[in-house]
Image 1: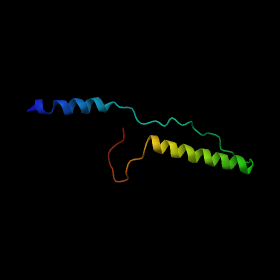
Image 2: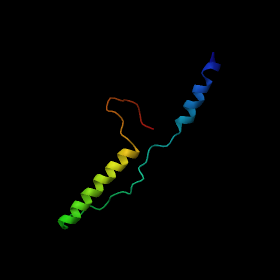
Image 3: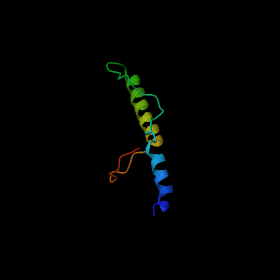
Image 4: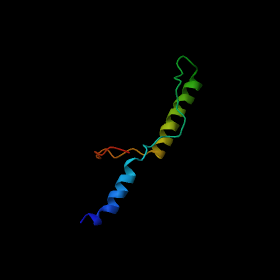
Length: 70
């Protein structure tokens, strides 16, 4: 009986240690407080661009999925 399930079990074990998805876009750290409007607008654009790229690389799970993400 077990011989029928060994291939699926091996595939399951190989997928178990897969790394989590990591966005390759650089982090945006500095919050431009007290600067001119152009710098604040550029900072907001950089954050929106990072969010867009990271959502493309690592798409979010559907809200109804209860499984842990790998």
